Amino acid sequence: MSKLFAVAAEFDSPEALLEAIGKTRKAGYTKIETYTPFPIHGLREAIGFKKPILPWIVFGAGLTGMCGGFFLEYWVQVLNMPYNIGGKPLNSWPAFIPITFETTVLLASLTCVFGMLAFNGLPRHHHPIFNYPRFAEVMNDKFLLTIEAKDPKFDPTAIREFFAADLGSSEVHEVEDE
Image 1 (spheres, rainbow, N blue to C red):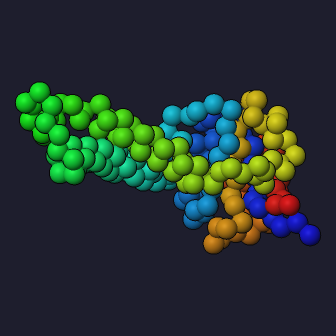
Image 2 (cartoon, rainbow, N blue to C red):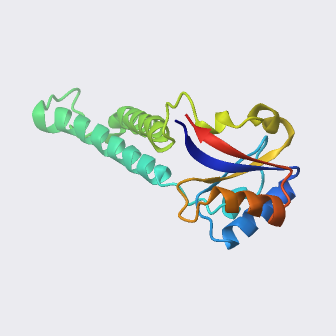
């Protein structure tokens, strides 16, 4: 037995989609998602997408890599094994910069890649929206708005009527989660 994932509606233009999102949010629906063939300016704000935390996590990882790389070299060359080469000072910080830079980039980039995978729920080999009957065609020239079953106000019949009558969508389908 398959479970209902969402109710989806198709729209013919980005303007119609943005107008529908506004009306959907005013109607009190919160778990909405859009699928479009190209990026739409203002869509992120329209659906209420929150600012991601990943950039701050990557920044923290970069700082950790920078401090860790610098203090690793400092500890090795100044505290653990002080070895005077050519009368130069033990704490010659310009020599520590390449490793400091490399550990900063390494830790920040690894955090970014694995954080993106974790926050996006990847790898996911199949998403329920792929069960939408016309998904391949929609991704060419239509715009899709879905209200997911996780929404507190989710009622498939009421949503179908809302999409068809109030928003004037061209197609409305229920999407099953197999």
